[in-house]
Length: 369
Image (cartoon, rainbow, N blue to C red):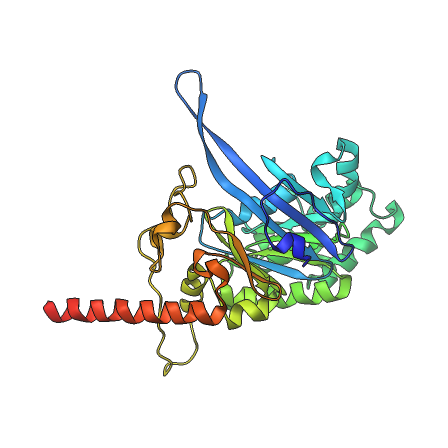
């Protein structure tokens, strides 16, 4: 990622495009109006996405993780102009997506695709599979008419489907097969970038691995870039090159996968990672509890949005919005713990001392009971 983008600077600054990147997002905001009263006046906004900045390299995958309702899906839909932005910039291969004319947007649409979360509701029950996959191919004239049938067969075979499946309807397929149809529908338009909106969350665990492996194989074969949206950290670790962690519409940590998984720095990231199941019955997991529930995006807390649930909350966290710090190369975190040029080791010592203090208080409380 380019340093300018990953620093998540707030933004009046414009994006400095890099030819390495397929997607570049700067200070993206997507707010939805709240209307009340007889005349439906706007009385507030739901800040679904509130100042998000990142980039995705060509042929690579960025995993976007966070709790339900944190704005992950809205980020993906806003990039594709399926949802209008409120502010910020989105570049696709160096072109401002929101500056395109309707004709230019139509021309670029095949190169930007999406795989939806639910394969059951995202396929028309009235169309055979061959027509579902080929409808947009015909509309955008991806291949000549005489090559259409062979092209659809080739796309289906790349996605693990057979030619005789063309005449069948979605209700005749299992959940995993339906998701393969959704992947084939996106792949058929010869895209460069695909938003994968929790593509395996509705599937059995035994099928999830097959779909993830299919996406990885297609990425290698066709040099695809993915924005992989998920709440399953194990899946994200398997498929991603870079990771962004979202909380209440904002990125709180981002960077290379190896750096974030080996040393999560933000308290929210640490809490998420502590909940990852470990397939070892002898391993004692030390989960970090998150008290309370995620605040409303219509009325986010002042200062650091996470301070209402953070065990390391300080006075400044309640008043001041934290800055972004590069704690390691290509590893960025938004947290007051790193104020005053503190190193990762300094913060680790502070966290350990705080955890020891909390443990003592809990032991005293338990003994008193």
